[in-house]
Image (cartoon, rainbow, N blue to C red; front, side, top):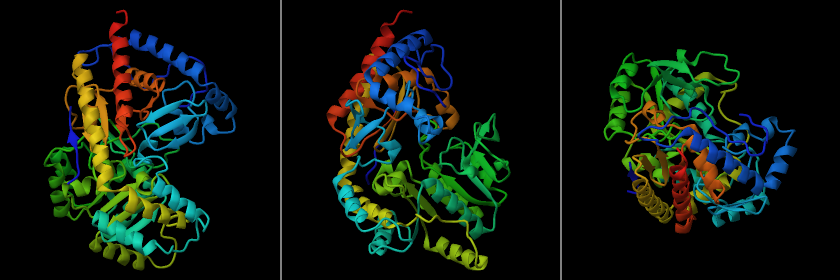
Length: 481
């Protein structure tokens, strides 16, 4: 069983501008660095970034025809004076337009988990591009890819979507159609993409729509219940009325700071959903880092359906969702009963010739035991070295690890809920560490100090990350008080 688990905006370009998102914390036992020291070092690092990236600065200034200055406004969420423009991504390395190289631990926020443009994927896509990209008809390899998915992940029937957001959205529609129920349940702090039903959180114990949503027109708390992760009694109470169509669940929370499940949580979740006839949908989009069969395979979960996006096609826009034979039968009955018309499920580019080629290459050449063994080895090395750094600086921080994914959290114990994870957030310190590392050739995911290892990640890359973190903390500790 392959699994390694441990605990331990918008902004116009402007030179030398430190960037902070969210709350900055006053010094505490767990975060001892003064705000003034963090700000001063951030200002210095922002100026250094501006000096080192003149071509990125010029391109950012030129991008006036992109709303927010980027093709996706998320690209402005990095803690940088202006976006870093990339010229090349290969293996676990990035090269920017100024010719500066980086060890990449973001990996497209999981999309390139097996490395950027690995040879098997590049070859498959090159061949397919010459033979056609999309026909809205099956490819020659479609049947084989379905067999590979069923064998790899243990679910009988599959469909393709273009993003994990789409796949989750479609599964919730199928679940409602199959059960005749309207309510869905998610966990506080979850991330399932841009699905309206999941944009709910707990505030002082009560559900509310997540702030900041643009153009929201419905009160999703009417049809979505939300409970704290790892809270079995709250889950039991929320399911008790017997009106919940489906629970949509990440096996571990990965977007609110990392929150790992209690040892008995998933068993209780499966038992409780069975008792009330609620479907269990597992979103493995981020937790594919846990092993070749995701967290589900690593820990023997028994969901009714599963979603996998981002990495499943090596970064080609693609997601898949699989269901049990029993659920597939109920979906088919609902489909037939609906009669002719638009199902509201599917997009024209889903199941394209290009996606099939990318899926085939990923399933046959990238999702391998050898690759995961290497990824876990690098993660274990990183975890050990980070603990050495924390000990040296007398910091009682936590490193939470999920297979090849790890996250450094400014609290002294592994969080059990999203609220506990949030208690350790420090926007200024987090932004400083990311900018400091980037200026020294290391890229982290632009939130929560998340590092992801690929098969192409080298020990030298890991050492560069650890050395950069150590140097940043040393400078903070030596700053005037």
